[in-house]
Image (cartoon, rainbow, N blue to C red):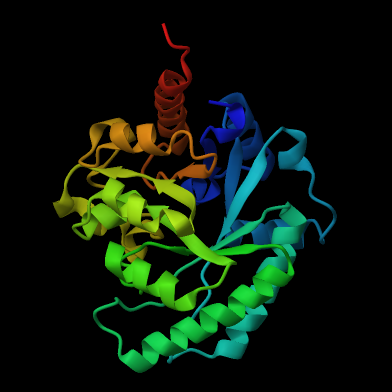
Length: 285
């Protein structure tokens, strides 16, 4: 296998959302620990752009890092002010060009696939196509994340959404844990959704009973529960099989750690992931 087919590993800047650390320090951390790239949270991207007044950003690139994706939230559905969503998308496209990334992550609404009416589903599909047109005009892919409480909350729902949207710039950011949480087999899900999958999120949990710790009100609260968050190798989702399957995909995967001590945990996680990938690339005896 060639290096170009090897899975790229990204550091999520959101992992350091409650830590006093500069963007330059994050870049240095990613470089020292042999990450290939960085996934920049939309909040961080905006602050950086405003702080530097839009002057050209070279820092990740100069350190040999790719900005694999900007992760943000574009409101879609029947209950949103869609012109505001278009404006936000245009702002994100400016940030994407500034950070030299080809991907923007979003969610497909704020309600689960089994909760929405046919009309709201159709509105969301239409809006995602419009946003896809905007992104395609800038050479950017819009990635819908597989996530609870959205129209891509399980394998069949994500497949239906992508089939209905049917837009070459609208793809998927596949979060294996959330598909497992929905009752789907992660690898079977990947086999079915692979035509649309452009990026991965990797995280793990001790058991299904603990998955509520990833709900937004927990994740974004500095004092939210982190109980049950564990390393990739020690959780309920079997990431050994997953990495063996996607290791030669040539795509990027972000290590999405929301718990305490992000520096210590992520240095261990990237080490484990690198060793797993090295096994795939080891020469045959």
